Image (cartoon, rainbow, N blue to C red; front, top):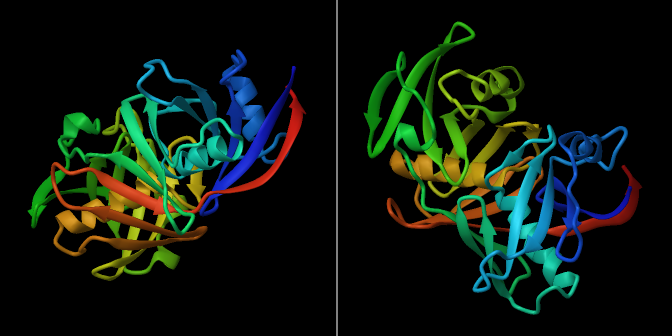
Length: 283
């Protein structure tokens, strides 16, 4: 089977985009892994599938497949690429659209400066919402935030957990360049306390409105940027009393902006989205 694809990126987080609005693509997990393979396929952190909305009041539906072939709930950088794609391809003329994702409906809007703003989610913190089992962790409160301490590689680590449509565990580090992202990231991702696995974020705070961040993502490894990870880090910092919205987030692939007014409010992510190339591939 030969399929047409677009390659896109948002702050270095790269995607294969498939338009399923007028076709019936039904790829297997193996085929998704082949598409995402950087040596034998197109190469991507995730695959984005654009589909018709199930509810006519919305504009589109949206599915996200990780590089390992498993479907996930949310992707902030992918959502920005989604809006750039449907507007560039003439699938909509709207500047703002409603898109169905696995956990609900999100709003995507193009800003006057060309960046795209994504309505991510209202953060949830309770362990059952992550999902996270804190048994065996040392629990303490910092400002409005719960910290969970545990032993990892013979070191004590403090993490904060938050769900922004997908699960995140965030820790604060002094120096992002020397943070053990590649060694401890996979251990946190697959820690048995996280029954659905988790995205592991490592945040360095530069000042109250500026951070640096690296994220080891579920099913993808470390990526150049993670939109929901940026939101999780900022939300954690605000809950700890260390950050004030809006916050600039510098990642290895580029810069994002996160704004959040506090508990019970929607978290928003803004940043770029670009086409890289298009083509066809035999699967």
